[in-house]
Structures are given as C-alpha cells and as structure tokens.
Image (cartoon, rainbow, N blue to C red; front, top):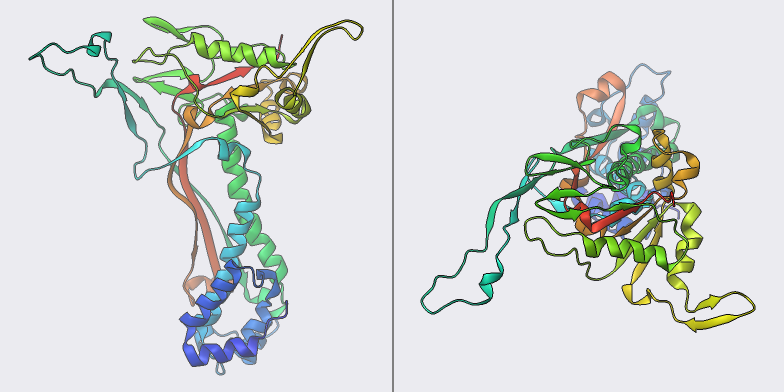
Length: 404
C-alpha cells in the first residue's frame, strides 16, 4: 500500500504528533497497512526535511542531530512513527515464531523473583462428621511447599542508523526487528520444551533451569521410572510403552491411577482434555490412535468383532513439535532413533508453569540520545521478557521412552 507522507505531515501540523502517532498505531493494529509499506527515507524527508536526509550521506561531514534539521516539521512524530514500526515488527516476529511448548504450560504472572508456594495439608477422613459442640478442623497451608526458580531477564535490541535512512534500508531493518522477536520467542520455547521433556537440551537438568522439581527443599527428577516414596508410593511417571495403539495410552492412564498426590494422598485425576505430545515421527500414529472410529479385532480373514474407539471419551488432543525431537538429541542423551519414539501424555498446564514477571515488552529510546552521535543510531528499540520455567506438579504428565 502506498503511504501518502504529505497527508501524514499535514495531519501532524493540524493535530499534533501524538494524534498522528496514535493514528498510525491504530492502522497497524487493524492491518490497514503493514510496517513494510513505509519508507524510512521518505518519512524522514517529509518530517525532518531533505537537508537532514542529505546529512545522513556518509560522504558528507555535516551530519546533524534530528532537532537541528532546518526544515524539520516534527521530530517527535518521525521518532514515534518509526519506533512504532519497529515495535510492531518485533511483536509480530515474536507472535509468528513456533510456540508449541509455551502454549501447553500455564503462565503465572508474578512480581517475585522465585517463590515458595505453600501446599495444602492432608485432612484425615474423620472430617466427614463433626460431633455436637466440637470444633471444626483446620484446612489450610502447612509445612508442605514447592519452590520456583529465580526469574531471569532476556532481551535484544534493534537500531535504525543514518545509513539505513539514506540508503532506504527499511525492509532490512524491519526484517531484523522481526528476527529480534523471533529469537526471543524461540529461546523461550527451547527452555520450556527442555523442562517438559526433562532432558535439559544437552545440559544436566538443574533447578534453576526448570529441569528439576523442588519439593520441601529437596530436588527430584521430573520423570521417575522407579517409585519416589513419601511414606506411601505415589510418584512413578515414566514407562517404556511403544506408541502403537490405544493400549499404550491405557498404560499411561494406569500410571495416573496408581500414583498419589503428595500431602493429600489423593489419586492423580485429570479433568478435561489430555494432551499427547509427540515428535514429528509419531504425528501420524498419534492422529490415527486418537481419531480412529472403529477397532477391528482378529486377522484380515477372521474378525472377532468391531468396536468403537475405547479412548474416545478421554478427549485427547494430539500435538507434534519438531523442537521436541531436536532438544532430545541436541545434548546427546538420546539417540536420533530413540528420540523418534519418545512421547508424553497428561495435563501439561497443571504439571508445568512459566513464572512471568513481564511478557514480551518493547521500549523505544528517546530521540537525540548519545548513541546518535557515537554510533549514528537515529532510533533504537529494545525488547525483553522476564520469567522462569517451573515444575509445579510433575505427576500430572507421564513420559514414555518408547523402548518397549
């Protein structure tokens, strides 16, 4: 779409820079036009003047700050519009990046840098009946608790230089801004996936990295092939079933029925939709198992009977991720052949969380900052997010290595 810069300039003169900036922001949000429809050079010529654009020529020695351009209309409008284009590109890059693992876990807003989350004490069965005149038993928070790791800030920045304006490198700058958002989203996706699969992407799982569950001050592996015993058997969530048919899903369901939650000793009951997370090699198999409408028993010549799908009532959602496969093999703990056989099943939102201090946030630098003189940077934006992966209730997800 062709942008009428002269009209934008006229609007700015009549209504002020804040008005035109809001107009541009609204049009970008409603997709009336896209960031790439703009030209930094043409925008600068209209709002800052031709003299300023000529001063951006590296061959000239009279480069001047934005505020000193003699025929400038409004520096603030140019700065805000350009900054908004960068902000939109960063956010769009973040949104468009693959985020399978990030959407499976819960996002818990927090103002704390690491938390001690109290649990609920077990209540004895005698609470079913209260004798006349007897006090009500307490039901509250006791000495049971889990810890979540300290949060960490991660960020990148993107800049518009004078050369980018003079040579009209708008497309390249916006592409780089989009990559800033994409990189931040991808790094977060890898960290969350490492927590979910329990391998740490090549590094030894640590509590700080979200790879261990800290319960009552002690660290435990997310997945255990032998029972972790807290006075009673309750925590065994790893098995070896090869994902072939509904019987393998049934084996994972059996693990849930055998486990008990800590403190309350109640069974692990999954309410609502279950998620089946598989690598691309098992995507077709997972869809076939979940979406099958008839089960034929017996061989091709003699069929004993035909039934419906025995697990159709569980409401299972199959999900596939290439990052699952890559993170399994990147560190060498799992061979490429074995990584294709891994599958996870359960309620990921209850098992895992991302403790978020703030989501992806993009901030623009003020015009005429020191970097304009030192590095010929006219506009700069920085994007950051802060949070931490945290294992909350690992027994709500089972992992199969597919070893058989």
